[in-house]
Image (cartoon, rainbow, N blue to C red; front, side):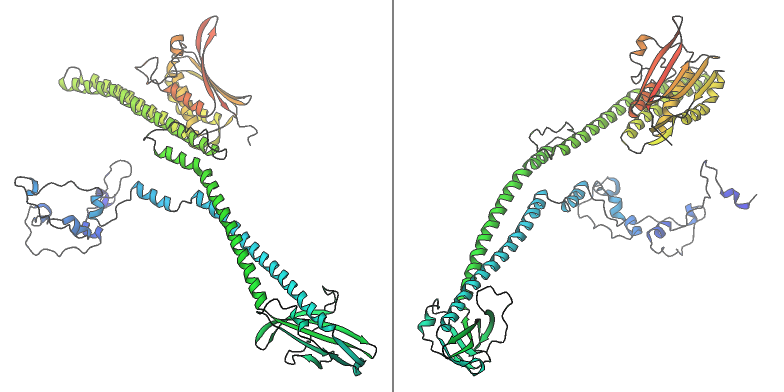
Length: 582
């Protein structure tokens, strides 16, 4: 045997090697260096074999590495414990002593959650106004460009008219390269085309090879070309240029000139400064902008009003819920809610209904536990007192106490099972389970009880797959089979039959017991309504019924009659069958 086997302490399941804590373990846990060893002689026989020193005040703060609280200036009370006034410790005092942060409350979590929450009104407003605003801006740009194009076209026609007016004053002698152009342009020919005194006109008349005939020689000669498909019924071109440091718009007209003495082609250029065009374009832009801004403001106002009215039921519903008393889980009455909000209201009412059911089940569980466990505990106390006073034999007293503890244990286990059924009812995750396999396993677990009463037990099973939690099927079968074994007389018969029955899986337990009376059948599924309260808690069939209902099935108990005489009881459970499994 190993030498250190004495260090193992068999304390039941999970025995482990015991090692004494080292000295200064608290400092090591806090990550602080241990205090220096004392040089004083140790006293023999003292605890820990070293002299006792009283712990200083705030020793826990020093061990954890956090600063001690400031000394109180209040006068200390004589005769009180520690000779100082008593102050209740704040919540999370241990975390504060260790220097750790206190956990945040529910309101802080709610505030953090509300910060990241999106506003429905803001979402609708931004989702509508931003696209509308972009469309309005694009429309404004398009309208301005169209208006500017129309203005340019109108003024270009004016330039073309000026060029044609000059062309009417041309005369020629000679033909083609030997021709000579002559022109006299009176001021009146151009005055009619000047809109006001803000813009100025310049012209140049040249031969086709660039020789100046008349006009402003500084005006650059045209070097472009006529479009293949011009917009006007003339050989005309328009372009932007700079003349004498000013931006100008130039119109060019190729004017054929013919007379009795010759023939030639003249190039007439008419340039106009852009002051009038710029002023008119700016006016058009401003007019367009304020009209579009007014349109956008009207759209925004309409959207805000509509969104406010559309979200009013949501705000009213939120205010009603916030004004409710704590624990009020009555359904929400929202008859005037919009159709899109009704699914949310219905889902909320469904959740609140389930919460109300859970709370009622919890209250009933606490109430039943307090009521039902009080009786066996009172009986147990009386039995213990009787045994202590010597009113009954110790062996008999222990036997009665054992029976009382067994009944209390059974009652507690079944109450917990009933609570677990309700818990699993609210949880998803049901799986395909073979009911026949579960029944066979439970029957194997209870085989000692069957053998003890010498019961003729038989089981006839075929695969029957149902959607359920395996624990629920096992608890259902265990309660039914245990109840049947208890009521079957010694040497009796007990048969279990499992088979698909249409769209259901049928589990039938047939015993040769006394059956049930009509009076007991009326309250059989009610909790704590056992026929024999001395040997049961009255929860077994209630658990079976809750499990069957939770799985979408049902349970029935019928007396088995032969010749008008009750010869046993048939307990049948029907659960929805999974079609085409496997």
